[in-house]
Image (cartoon, rainbow, N blue to C red):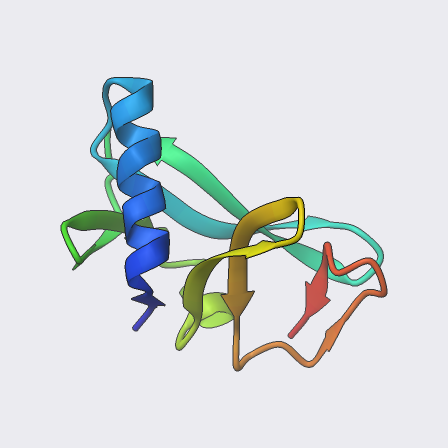
Length: 106
């Protein structure tokens, strides 16, 4: 199960409204960076055949089952720190994170 804070859900809804279309977002991982994996968020206009859909606070979150082991139990928040803002991922499956914070290992 993935959890999404109210702030993150509102930001997702704002982005979808600004975009003007879309069913929700897909959360996954890709191979990259110095630690191996990075989180990926992308708009979903048409779900993929095997997608698992989670309705959280009026947001649809889509997850490809092959990514589920990497993000199970993760929580997503939207934070502002000084001039920076963005989604923050708290993942109990992470074993290590690179120094720049862009990639992780499980």
